[in-house]
Length: 108
Image 1: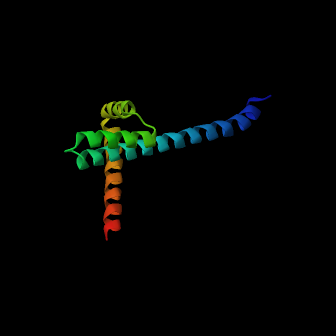
Image 2: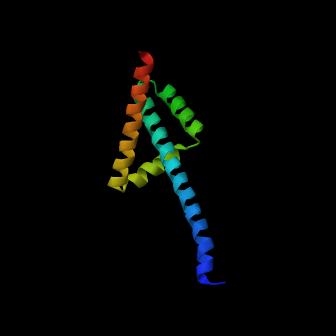
Image 3: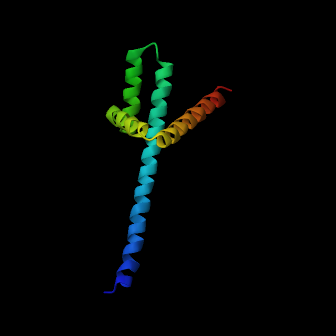
């Protein structure tokens, strides 16, 4: 088997593998954005009721199958890279703005 022949068959498989992996990473980031945004929203909404706040946050984490340790780890890693943190936080901000618009639309 020649190198060109191997490359012809291996390269598409590798491209497929890495593109699938990139999509999973993107979905994971979106899940973290949504979860982190919900935690910020709930923290503001239930700032005077810490017991209810904890229950609501636990519920969001369970629904999204994320642990608080993962959230803490993510914020730690992103905190070391200001550009990554800024992009992540911009995405969270956009999620919260969209959520606010959806709530306002439903009220009218």
